[in-house]
Image (cartoon, rainbow, N blue to C red; front, top):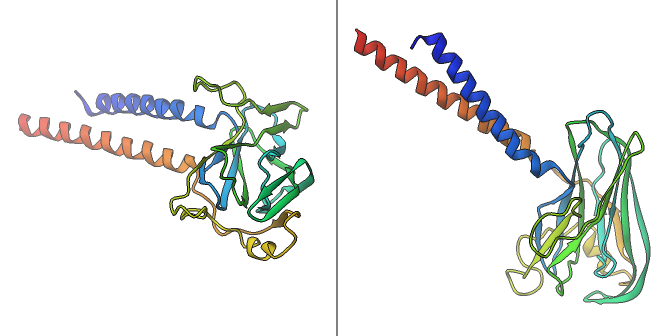
Amino acid sequence: MSFPAAFRRLAAVTAGAAALTIGLAVPALAHVSINPGTAEQGGFTKVAFRVPNERDKDSTSKVEVSFPLDHPLPFVSVKPVPGWKVKVTEGKLPKPVTTEYGEVTEAVTKVTWSGGKIEPGQFQEFEVSMGALPEDTDRLLFPTTQTYEGGEVVKWADEPKADGSEPEHPAPVLRLTPAAGGDGHGAGTASPSAAPAATDASPAAPSVTAVAASGADSSDGTARALGVAGLVLGLVGAVAGVLGLRRGRNA
């Protein structure tokens, strides 16, 4: 086999592998999700609502995340996103909820980001720090509405199905696990800077603050790119070795 022929075959194999890698990765970005998807009961956590753009032309211009009313979160703070305006909406709960911080009658009902753009083929993460997470449920749902510049509105609000299959427009779900330390504030939770000061305030009033967090999570795209690059280098090395062996035999 000549070197050009081997290189063409290598290119074809690499292209197929790259296509397979990207194809397998697409479903993970096909809907709005919350990352990380789990947190410990009774503690604080920082999550990112990851919003991909599924359209070929229109950009996403508005994202609205609804917070649970049956399990309200007393303390909520949001990280500013460059180019986006954020509005935190508070409201009275249908009925008061008793927490370790006292009786909560009002809480954050939704957070809205607007004014920015998520271009086609891109995604944006909107970070929120929140707590204390409830201890009497194993999950929290955050129905999300995604609005495109053309006026299209997509509601990601479907609850998980009992059979484990994914609904058409699943709502972001935060799974809650028992605290590792057994004291309701186990390791692995991130306590927001606003929480200690808010604890001294009236327990009925939720704490809402805009804070700047340090560093951003690495994107999934970087990991995929490195994986494909590694595959390419491995295949190139294999072909080079085979060609060298054949040349040695011919000599």
